Length: 373
Image 1: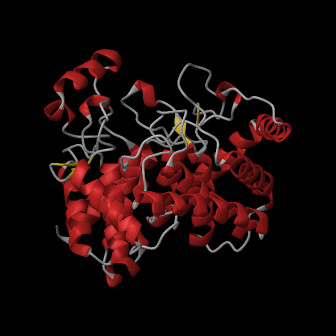
Image 2 (image 1 turned 120 degrees about the vertical axis):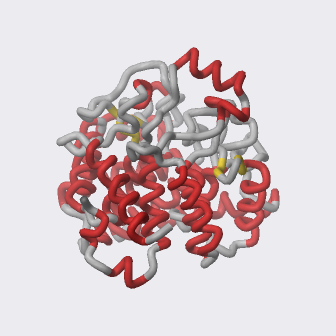
């Protein structure tokens, strides 16, 4: 792909995220899929990071302001569950802080699994990246309470079973969730200069490394010895391991062996959601790892797969190929929810991140306005 084409595609992905950001800063997961008409902390924190990389710092800032307001709105809930945990009280997942919010920042009350702590860790990491990329040495005063409260929440519940990044398997402790928690706690410890959060992060890393030593690779969860492509985040962006860590290398090899579908990456082996197609989010995550490893040919292959799936309108769907791989389950989900998301903001974010990671030095150092319309 030429530099000119690359810039054009990245601009369209940046514009897609900006177009789907509310004035208050919330970023809808997908504008064409009713089930995704919310703002997930996980998805949107990656979106905000992509916007920062593209120089759209004001838009990223609006998102972080929105999260700060949303967290402030549930401050009592967070404090209450931490206190209940410390007392040894039983806690229902229904009473835990939510993983997603309505676009106005209010809590969504429905029957969808909502106890997922990964998004809170991802937000802290994304906020730290935003502050670094905008040259802010300290956390703004108005964020301090939320950052500390979220970090306490993560440190308290890091080893508690909760729903994974896919809103599934709420009775397990998930490797990618722990990776997100680690990234958030490390960021909080650095930003707040609070060693207790760094020590909590170290405990999370010890748990992960012990599990990897026992299995020889990083497993999907405490109850599933398969691999999950979200485990790619252990290295990039959350830094639990170095790119050349041997157990992580084995994990990457297993992910590619078991989860590759026509050049893209599926979520996990037994996945049936819309037939379990390949996700740009995960293909981009694999490419991001390869870029960090210095294997730019493999990283470019991942990016090309994503760019080949951007349609003529600049839309980038959640997944591809599920209808051919497993028509029965694809149709089952079609009957339940209608057509899958055809324009997922998180997909755009990972395309932006990988494209910028692969830009050569002179291209990347040019005026950031190249990414904008």
